[in-house]
View 1 (cartoon, rainbow, N blue to C red):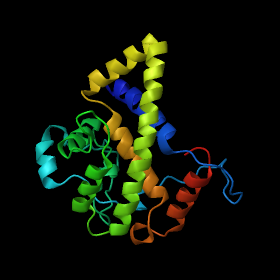
View 2: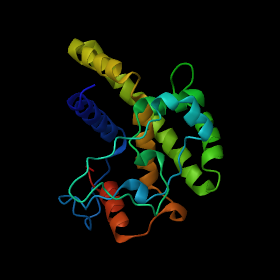
View 3: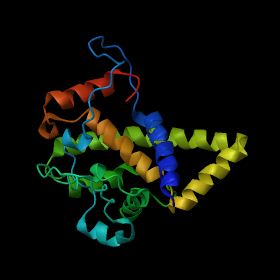
Length: 221
């Protein structure tokens, strides 16, 4: 797939993800919602462990390739922050890898619907060292599963009314090689977890607190 196609597809999924879980009320007057705070990678603020075990990475090796590094500038390759471990949501992983992991662990059942009990079992393996964080991630999963169900219903309705929309979605899925719903669900879980991240996993810095306040209190991210 061309870079332009990738960008269009990724932007489309970003919009869907925002519809799923990136909106909140702007009731706190202490937050200026007209000014976006400086960018901070979410994984640098809320340290969520990788949900992909070694066994899962082996089973889904077809999609487990690392992201392409950015081109080198005059100062050489970009520096990588080694102060924190790599996390699933840091890597912008291929949607097919997320789908594969969810299929292998039966987080997505045979009917393709999310199973909170199976996700909880996955957390028991990958987030076993922080029960508080695991509980919040499970709550986030339940919230996002409901939002995903609503999204699917709206998409079905839109497809029935707009044949061009249906054709576009089918083309995007065919180009990507899998359904986007796993990645959409996981991005929603990461965002909900970020907003409710416990102190045990939270980087209590000015930058992180500013970003979280903005996301929680403003209408846009």
